[in-house]
Image (cartoon, rainbow, N blue to C red; front, side):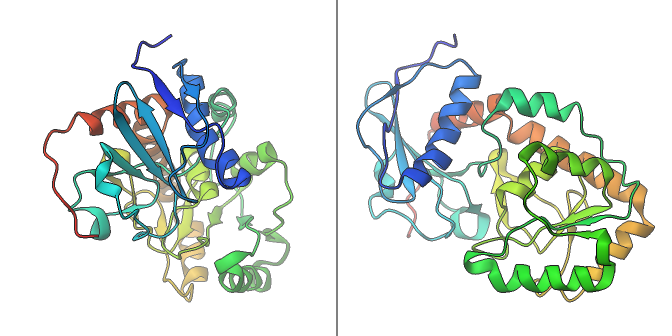
Amino acid sequence: MISVPKIVLPAQGPKPLYYATFVMYIRRMLDYLNIAYSLSGEIASGVSKFEMAVGSGVRFLFDFSDHYFDFLPNWAEFDAYYKFHYVESAHGDCERVFPFAPVSFYDWIQYYRIKKEINYTCNANIVLNMQRPGGGAIERRTHVQSMLTRKYGALAVTNANSSQVEYWKKINNCLVHVFVPGACNNMLDRGHLQYLAFGCCTIAPKIIDMLPYYEKLVPGTHYVECRPDYSDLIDKIEWVRSNRECAIEIGKNAKALFERSCEPDKLWNWVLLCHSKKEIKQCGH
């Protein structure tokens, strides 16, 4: 077991679904790394935030809000503030605030096993967009799925009812996956991050979220960027069809990005590295 100061996480939160999604993401990371922690009451700090106590008097805040400026009024009281959707233009001057990876995987043993079974070869013409229209993305996702169905017919797969493993393994027999972000049209969603992790070429509007170690998703290197209104989406798909080797390279770059910034050991090392920073500036949020 890794020797670290005593870690305490919330035993419950204001919303069970949020707890099961976000607090459990951190707990499963610690479980995989065999790092001990305890649970104590409800120390969540708002609906979209929760606290981690480390050692004696050290407090970390994890903020999974989809909204970039949704800060706690007392955010500067924490030793480090980890934002799941960190944007350089909004948070770059806040040395106490650090990027953290959005939720990707809970079962890391399964991830490492499935990772060996997935090989994106861009050897098919199937265009994937397996996202349920909902929330703030209903109009955008419905529009994109209609566009894909009209253009590609049965080669456009928009059914989101596959099992989790089947969903991932579709990478082995696809041309590309189009991702339409959820609450914000420039954010990195869970499904998108998973497909990046498994090395699939993806298409999306410009993604402005920053990953741990201040890693950026670079268009043309880690994914193919389309216009925010998706007006050039078909052109981007056809570019992938005509440039399959480039698409494979983009997928490899995305996979390498995930491996160096979002796997469990990298995430925990990042948490500790950020806390070790000594220069703290105030931020006017």
